[in-house]
Length: 111
Length: 112
Image 1 (cartoon, rainbow over the protein chains, first blue to last red):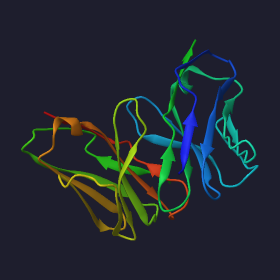
Image 2 (tube, chains in turn cyan, orange):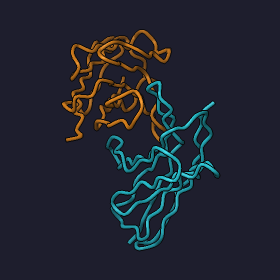
Image 3 (cartoon, helix red, strand yellow):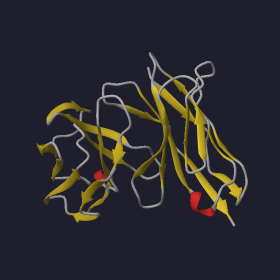
Image 4 (tube, rainbow over the protein chains, first blue to last red):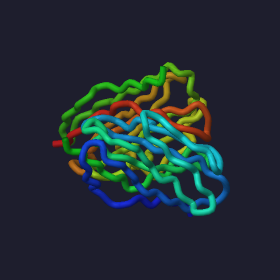
């Protein structure tokens, strides 16, 4: 079946540090891949997406590249800010109107 | 505009009450979703409407009753809920069956 595995958190970083949150997936077919972010007390916001192999999604300084050979979609940011503290969800969509979410990774950024 | 709105933001209800959650989108999306999210967990899909017809029910108890009055609105009617139903209820919409979903801010439900 389809599944997403994310690194466990929390990930604790100092401001301006480099961020990587690992995400790997198992899927039949050719899924689309997404990163969503959830700030405390809010809903999920779409952060970035990639729809085919080697696509790079980017938004607000965050990037992720769809790697079919390693079935990965790792989230990166060169310099995190305190305001980036949130829970990040990796997700895949294979059609049939369903998203499969990872368990989420909490990011804590300190000044 | 990629906004999905939900009302109310917070809801406290007793186990014998009947209440409704509302969701609205004006992006012209034809698929709408209800999710339930417990603390420190990812969202769990409950229902999917496609072109105003219920297409997926993830074996949700009948005390949750969805309704899609038109392509922009989605309701979730609640009755005889249990305390374990307390959670954040999220609505989402998407343009097509494949593609990104846009989420609303959620309704924080507490069942007493």
